[in-house]
Amino acid sequence: MAKVRYQIELKDPVAHLVQVCLEFSPTTDDDMVLSLPAWIPGSYMIRDYAKHLQGLNASDPEGTLPLIQLDKQSWRLSHRGLPVQLRYLVYAFDLSVRGNYLDDQLAALNPCALCLAVQGLTDGPLELTISAPYQRDWQVATGLRPKPATAFLGQGTYLATDYQQLIDSPLLLGKLQCQQFMVAGIPHYMVLAGEPETDITRLCTDLTSICEAQAQVFGGLPADLTQYWFLSWVTDKGYGGLEHMNSTLLLLSHQDLPHPLRPDESTEAYRSFLGLCSHEYFHTWWVKRAKPAQFLPYQTEREQYTAQLWLYEGFTSYFDDLALVRSGKMTVAQYLTTLEQSINKVSLLPAESVQSVADSSFNAWTKYYKQDENAPNAVVSYYLKGSLIALCLQARLQQQDLSLENLMQQAWLAFGASGQGSLEDDFIGLTRRYAGHEVANALESWVHQAEPLPLEQCLTQLGLKVSYRARSHPKDWSGSAGSQYPARDLGAVTSGTAEGVQVLQVLLGSAAHKAGLMAQDLIIAANHKKVTEASLLQVLADTEPGRTLTLHLFRRQRLIELQLPVVLAAESLRMLQTQHAETVQRWLGVAL
Image (cartoon, rainbow, N blue to C red):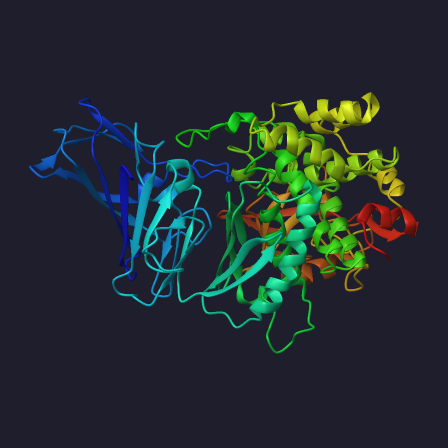
């Protein structure tokens, strides 16, 4: 019998208020502490969920009980040994997969940001009852197990084995579209909220093959997986996902889904959504079960540091699109285009020579998740560079007739199936035993040194031909060379506004840096003529290299004149083509 019960009521959709009633019986005569997590596992930033709580009060059958706040997220409760009831409201208007959201159409709830923990009562069974008095036709989708009296997708009571399972089980509510599909005999569910027009049958068919491809990497589904839920929140604009033990909460736009009237259409947006599903599903093994030992268990009241996010997020990013290729949902040419983008977004930014992926992982709390205008110069993505490390490791292993998939299966048995997690250099040690000192030493250098990867050599070993061209504009990362603008190097990330061109970021050593441009500058004229973002690039293209452009700009309220040197963009943008088909086929696992 559950010792702790949560009653969740969608109180006021207009005001975005959710009411929580927490009931429990004290197990000690001492005061009890109640607390709310400060962050959600999988998203490594302190979010201070308690700031959304209001009106917290406690009582028992004899009356009100005193609550004293101890810090930003915890309270001390004095009690009389009688059953306790706490009530509070939670403001739910976080349009993301990491918090709580409620409006008149749907609710996306994370118990991690909703349900107070009762110290001393987190290890036993819990009950969560959810109701929507003004939306009685709303359904509920969650990875939690329903109580026998609760209908499938019904409002009612759901069970958790402990508090850790509760806060790892998001809920999606509304008028839901739901369809089941099977992977290795285990039921999987695609759930859509937001009333989208889409072909859910096609979506489930596509996901079936993608999930099967991911399961093959690890040699099968986790033994404890009995169901899996893709909880998809469809909105006008949004994108993201967060992994959980037997579910994922996804945020996407209507344009990301396949249209029912165009059954053969495969858009870039749809492939991107399938890649997101693939990424979060891979986490079922790689993060939710196999994880850094520092996360055993999660301590959600404070930061937990690990230098291994390059391994768990980066390798997941490598295998997510690979599963799309292997399941036939992405062509090899499309895959190479996405790979070009990843390579160029890492190698063309100064940060790669400033920060290692191990350092980026450890400092995710303060740097990667809190990026500012200097991020391209100082913060390397452990997602992108981690995925390229996986690519390089596959190339080195393939040279020895070995494979990254076999290594991943060994890592799964050592870190995941065993429940032991991994210490900082355990994966490198496993690689050493599997492939020898040379490969392991290379991997160690790639992880701990802030230096470029040997991509040309590794890509050639995988059967690809690497060629170079200059970037045609600042947002050019891959594909065919654009013909709109001849290649000039501005060296700044900009955004067009009604007033001019806003400078968002300036790359160290670039023409913009040498001219003295700063982030937040507003360029209003070039060569004494008003500019837009497009016309600034055109003026650059029309100016002979070696000359300068006169820029007028506002720096806050000061009018400033600068001289921008016009230089040709370097031949640094990598483009990939298949050179040795058999080698590429062996790597990708598909016929060309």
